[in-house]
Amino acid sequence: MKNSYNGELNYKNGRIITKKQDKGMRGIGLRSVKATVEKHTGTVDIEHNDTDFFVKIMMYL
Image 1: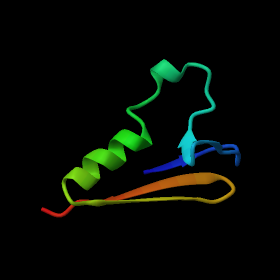
Image 2: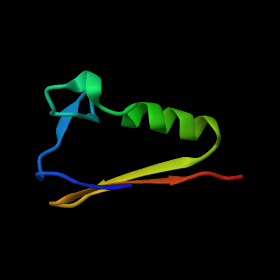
Image 3: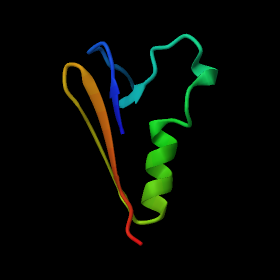
């Protein structure tokens, strides 16, 4: 997944969190995605540069 952003990330307790006001209207969250993928022995790689945010998921079938 690739998504553009303004170059500023918000961290809480070492985790990236949304900076948007309507937090209840966001997706299921990176924490939930990571937990689900790892439960099924997959991996999650989170990267970013100054303009884009990337989440790469590897699932073994």
